[in-house]
Amino acid sequence: MTELLLSFRLAFLVTAILLVLATPLAYWLAFSKFPAKFLIEAVVALPLVLPPTVLGFYLLVAMGPRGPLGRLWLALFGHTLAFTFTGLVIASVLYSLPFCVQPLVASFERLDPKLLAASHVLGANPVRTFRQVILPLSLPGVITAIVLTFAHTLGEFGVVLMVGGNLPGATRTVSISIYDHVQSIEYAAANQLALTLLAISFVLLALVYGLNRRVGVRWLSN
Amino acid sequence: MAIELKQSELGVRVCLTRGSFHLDVDFSVPPGISILFGPSGAGKSTLLDCIAGLTTPDEGRIAISNENLFDSATHLDLPIQSRHLGYLFQSPALFPHLTAQQNIEYGIAHLSNSDRATAISETLKLFRLENLASRKPAELSGGEAQRVALARSLVTKPRALLLDEPLSALDAGLKNSIIADLRAWNAEHEIPILYVTHDRAEVDALGERVITMDHGEIIQQGIPREVLDAPRHQRLAQIAGYENVLEGIVKEIRLDNGVMRVALQGTTTSIEVPLSYAKMGDSVRVAIRAGDILLALERPSGLSARNILYGTIESLEQRSATIICRVNSGAMFEVHVTLGAARDLDLQPGREVWLVLKTYSCHVVA
Image (cartoon, rainbow over all chains, first blue to last red; front, side, top):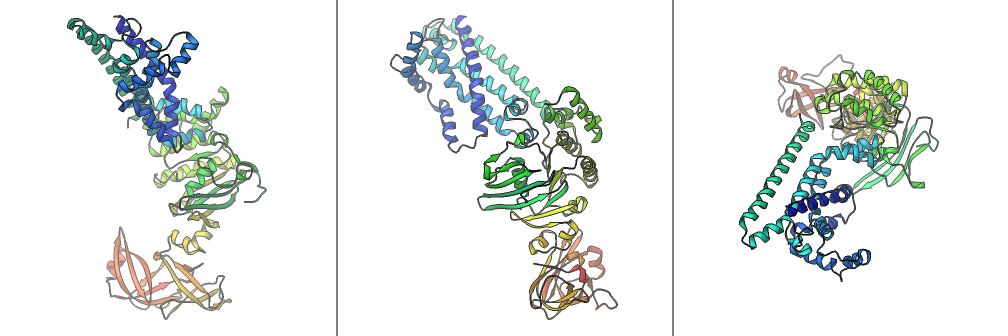
């Protein structure tokens, strides 16, 4: 069960970090009139189209003893990032970025611009407008972003294998473990893990969609 | 606008170019309701957006009581939230996740609890919203929602109020009651109110002052009756619903009677029109509402109307309950008659008719 706990710890951390990073990024992507915005949009969406091995490969190189990130880490903490849990978190944050940013951008862009204008005219600065108008009205999008990020991180395989390897307790997530069991023809153990993951994922998703529907209905009735 | 504004006066000088659209206006309005009238696309909403700070003009100055909100000369551009204005859109734009009361409280969050409670209860009472305070916007009718939106703006005691066709979706009864509320409020607070509309009826209902706009420019300003009933510009005549704008040349000026005769282009006849700024031989345009022209089957006599023209009906077209009749009298006239009148007179294309025009229905425009 340590694999399962590790996977959930990873998914939880990555989701929390991404919410903090992706929210301002999504706000900027949704409302900025910067002409070269499309370039940033393309970069954010890259993990969607790249094979995980490509992203994993470059991250591995960057985090290794000769990579810029690896060297920095080595100087600061005495070890490189590759094949560590921290390295896994950083890789997963990058890999899951579009799954967090895109639902947020979509829900920010769907807001009636008149509501934001009304808030500003009534004396609210951008921060207050974000907290009291944009965020509450984008709650379904925020929930979707959380679910997608969490589920995507929980299920990732290629990037984890490239960057994290397969160290029990540090980088062996549940998807790697299932793969290991199958390779060793331990189908019962693989099935046990797979089934647990399936059940937990389903319960989480059902909860979230149920909640999302209630939230949506409350505001959008009529 | 004047360099020195009076107390509470709103002064606006704005130049803005967006693609092929140019906005170039300069005016100031005292406290009270001023109507910004013009067709869609005239630049009225853009002008309000500039005043509110939602759009930044290329050049100009916007000020209230000599306090600048925007001044390109000193690179001053107060952020929207610091301008302290009220702005009502065509849609109420209430926050859907807040109740009516929470919506009204939104703009006075900085007040102390007791001040806020007082302001809220006064406002709910003034706008007759006590029973709706706990409702969400989705549970309000269009008129109720717009009333909440008005209350939400006014509770902040704005320095000026901008209204962008806020009542266009409401029926006349609701419209009048909201306008009455607004007037009652402003009798006490006396702020400048800029009310945008393209609806002639709203101009008549509100009318203290009207500023007419088209193609990003101010065409004319003054008292509605003077501006719209005797338009001095052809463009304004068309906007204000003058279907007939005819070319002519001044042939005779009768100062003693306060009238002049204008020979209409393409006809052998001339018509009598009120005296206006024109010399003998000047080219002028005469604007006449299609509904102000009478049709007769025989040449009428014993009428006070001074202009009786002979013509032939070219075409008839029904538009809802009105028959639009085109009459060729050398010049083409559009005449509106009711369905019943068209039936009783048996109007048909080719039929010979007499057009009857009162002198004061003919307006000389530039």
